[in-house]
Length: 170
Image 1 (cartoon, one colour):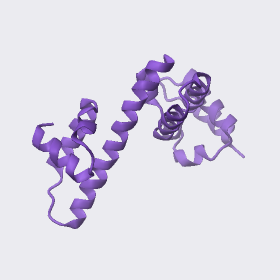
Image 2 (cartoon, rainbow, N blue to C red; image 1 turned 60 degrees about the horizontal axis):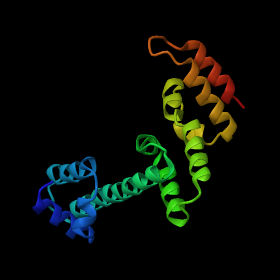
Image 3 (cartoon, rainbow, N blue to C red; image 1 turned 120 degrees about the vertical axis):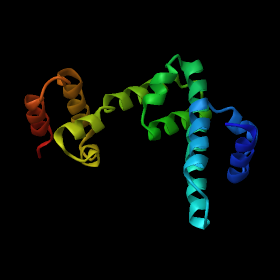
Image 4 (cartoon, rainbow, N blue to C red; image 1 turned 120 degrees about the horizontal axis):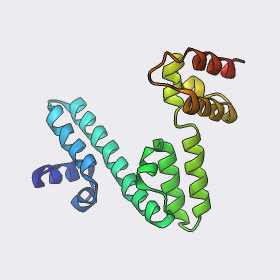
């Protein structure tokens, strides 16, 4: 991201250039890509650019705070970034409220990791992920555990699919 693009993003979002400069290259490169991919011709285009940049700015802000959480707790930045966005937001919010609650942060991370494979399970069994998320937490964890232990990329996974379907059957 060059200085002109940085200034333009800051102007569009109404934030300081420093807040954008502090973000990692992944976020800044994505912001640059927004400019390169969208030709602003009307108000709808302006709105689309703003929304895309705002989402990236929010994500970048969360990433900055997750780095602080990592330093404070010892949880790796990679692990924190691998979590779903809602969990990342919760961790950042709680960290900003009380950074001494290390056990709570580990609990949040462990709970999120226990169901992190739900999108993969949904794809495997051909079920919408939202349907799996509506199941009781214990079943979500059990399904993800079975997937983690039994999934074989070089197999049709027929037995695993049948097992998971039995686990989620009413």
